[in-house]
Amino acid sequence: MDKITGKQLAVSEKIHSCQLDGKGGMLPLNDKSEITPEQPAWLHIDYEQESSLAWFQATNLLPDSFKEALSGESCRPRVARQGEGTLIILRGINLDNNAIPDPLVTIRIYITEKLIISTRHRPIYAVDEVVNELKKKTGPTHSGSWLVEVLDYLTDQASDFIDDIHGRVIDLEDGLLERTIPGRGAMSLIRKQLIVLRRHLAPQRDVFSRLASERLSWMTNEDRHRMQEIADRLGRGLDDLDATISRTAVLVDEINALIAESMNRRTYTMSLLAMLFLPATFLTGLFGVNLGGIPGGDKEQGFAIFCGILFMLGGGVLWWLKRSKWL
Image (cartoon, rainbow, N blue to C red; front, side, top):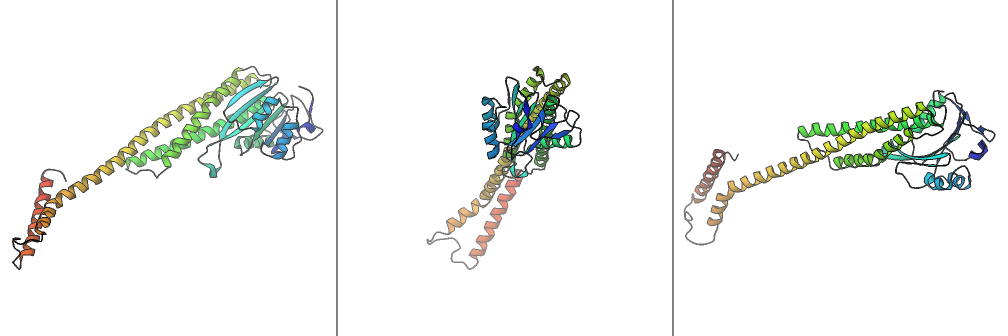
């Protein structure tokens, strides 16, 4: 790659811009900064800002085929190489409480030995963690270690989120043991998040494994080893994710069984009540006809006697139901 200066990385609405000082810290990036493999530059921008889009169109630091990927709608995790540069698209956990149904956000990275360009629209907290490390002078020292640190934080956050969903599923299981049915939409939200996580984190693990196996000049053997460890850790998280998906399927069956049991119990109760009042209904209907010759119609105590007969008949039916163990 040709010589790169800080002037070529001037974006007015940038989120972060700095040079790695090679010692775990960072240096300010200005027009006179000279970018070297020992002190690579990092530019982090919001791809929906107008100044960022204008910079993408004007810069010659990026291959044309990667410009659209860095600022477009592509969000499926993947890795692609062209010349000295590598394009990496990754998904991270969305920690914005106002966007719970959508658990993932996208970060796009173009990385070479001298240059790191990362883009996002919604906040990526893994990036903020790396910035904090650089401020404390305990951060990455070169391009490869920067990528490993970002991927490490992304995986930690994904693992924590999977554990959180797993805990919510356990709470639902405990509630079902006490015959408490979850609120409407609670299970649907969990299953949606699990499916979205599974769909995107599985190819992300493949991206990690590929980065660990490829001989990229800006990655050391230690970086590759750590990258493989991260891929293995994400693989274990995916195993937990699959187990949780299976548990939610069992939960849905149990919820449906509880609802069906509740409906059957109510139907059974209504059937017993109908049976209890059936003889009384028959007699009242029979004696309610407006015709002559009704027994007891000419007696003053006829109504009281009739009511007593109804109570005795109802008591007899109730005794028979208990004797037959229907109640």
